[in-house]
Length: 96
Image (tube, rainbow, N blue to C red; front, side, top):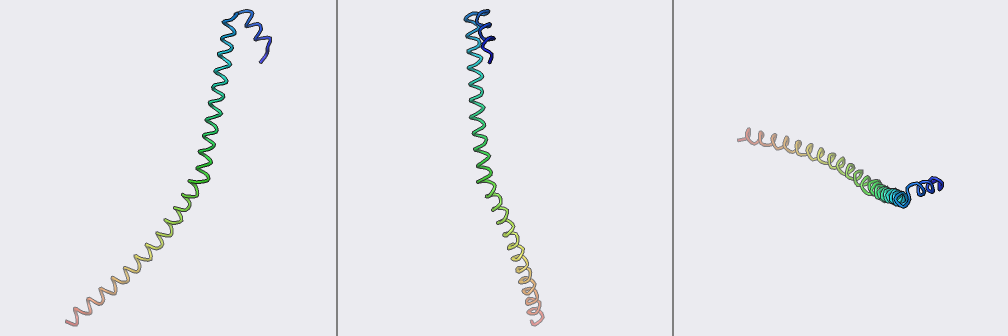
């Protein structure tokens, strides 16, 4: 900030100019501080998402894939058992 400009404002506007400048500086500092804290919170959330949530999602996808494979095997096994049972039932009906 150019101190000459500040001195000219104070000479021209007196205490009102000084208060105006002080308020301007205060609100700029307050906004800068708020933005800094917000950025830190965003970085923390992104880090948590990257370090915690992403591996959980990957693990869940792996488990879902494994469960799908197991369910397909169970379905095939049940179909085979049902076919064998149907054949046995037909054989019993013929024998009677």
